[in-house]
Image (cartoon, rainbow, N blue to C red; front, top):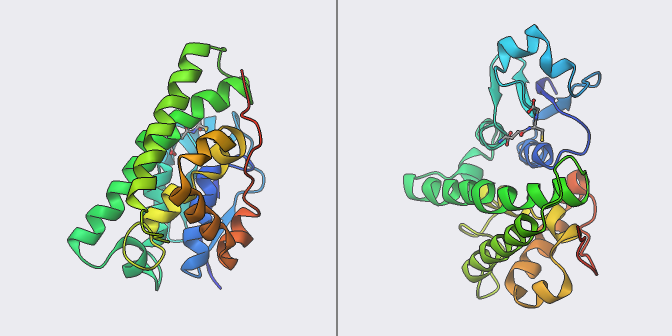
Length: 221
Ligand SMILES: N[C@@H](CCC(=O)N[C@@H](CS)C(=O)NCC(=O)O)C(=O)O
């Protein structure tokens, strides 16, 4: 298989796993740049000429096309293979719903996971209990909205097959489920828990993500 492109990232970047799952479902080879060094490679003039903000992930395709922002990268990869219609939708309304969930994943889930993760685990953010608590409250509110959308045992957010909506939402939940979504919170999210478990059991998903971990105790500040 000719490589589709290469992705610049540090290891174990959940934003990259979402891209790699879209690539795997589409049968595309997206490799990770092996000699990438965070804080070095992404500060070089060559990198900045292609990706002006110097942030990762960043995708450079075999044909020279470059794109950054992980949601845009995941969408481009989802759109670039035989499963494109299924993954991003074949009509405007389906596409809008899938895009809605992609925006929701970034704006309501990831944005409320990064600060607690940055404070309590990676420690690159100063500890701030009020901000930590407010992110967890906002996260729970967002997850309840997804839980409601999944009522009736739905396995997919849009239609009856996996789409980019599931990749962006379920693919963003491994980290919070491992760290913050404790048994008490999970009690209020029965549809979401079944949905993420079913997503994680898919053979292709498992190859990319490994096992889903459900925490017993929330990581605290
Ligand atoms: N919204 C961006 C966020 C990317 C991002 O914030 N990347 C961080 C690492 S997690 C980065 O590259 N930071 C380097 C910098 O700020 O110079 C995306 O989804 O791709």
